Length: 129
Image (cartoon, rainbow, N blue to C red; front, side, top):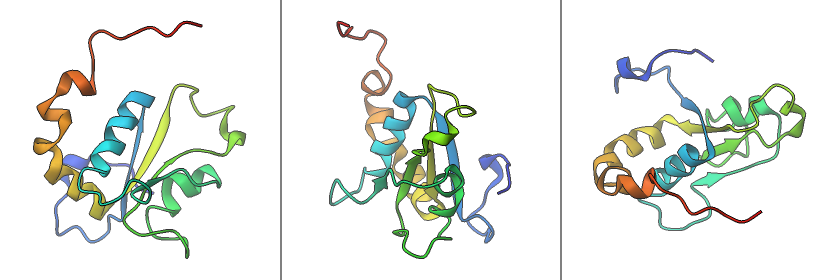
């Protein structure tokens, strides 16, 4: 895993296999919706598989696990043993580079840009506890 800015990535960069994002639940939901923007079905484009945090961060999306479905983004970590070190209000989203490029192409047409108040509402309904 190499940590570097995405701004300097080019289509000719052969070494990039996936991108890992960390965010709040709201940010992750918005990214997952962008993953599904061109989807033909609701079930296979994003998954929350069980496994070690390193698998959900790197191995699944980078195609390093034999049975991991290709072109699928992975939400994580689902392994509760990471609860002591992973922030309680964060999720990860590991995105294969082919999917990330598709998401970048779709961004301007997506609800994130066309309806930002839906993606990031200023006012929210409060649930009763």
